[in-house]
Image (cartoon, rainbow, N blue to C red; front, side, top):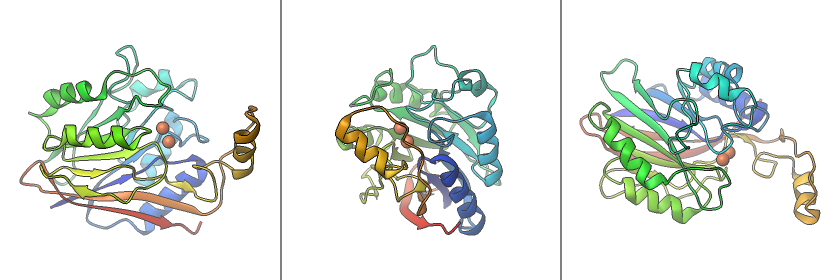
Length: 263
Ligand SMILES: [Fe+2]
Ligand SMILES: [Fe+2]
């Protein structure tokens, strides 16, 4: 058995501090690899190389992104220099950065391929069909990777579930992100793929998806643009442990959790 941890969208400084605290104090000691979605880690919007280094120091081995991938204006120029960061696989070809990460899991002879796919329902960012692009990804890595970890970054439950069945038996795990709210449907699909519709966020829960409550309530009523700062109260770390069968490419167990962090 080989255990990996996946952490949901890290939101701003509270999210980063919560993750650092969690990885130092609470991480299961037999965890072989930590993967985290960092699309909201820079002030709620995107990632910078500086913050990717901070997260690496905190114990995040590999970082993924989502529709906020290019929110920080210089990140397009930085991403190619970052070894442990991949942009969503199904962005148009012209987008810089690694499409996926191929990583040797420390202290094992196993290799894991990690990729994020963007959904297209109610998503504003330009992207190619995630289903067809997953088929390409699978062909690219099936010979070299022992495990495929796939993230489905999407708004709708139906698109995520459909994608889960599409990769069933080919990916070791497929975990959803983007909604920032953890779902209660973690299971092993019938061909051995671990599935969870959404893992939730790492950030302040006295909030609306990580943002201060009052300006969001106002914005829903008057539609006017206004600053919606990242909130700071009730920080929780949301993630899931996935136990992989080291003899096969499948998963044995998926354990979602949400932990309150006292900073
Ligand atoms: Fe997102
Ligand atoms: Fe997000």
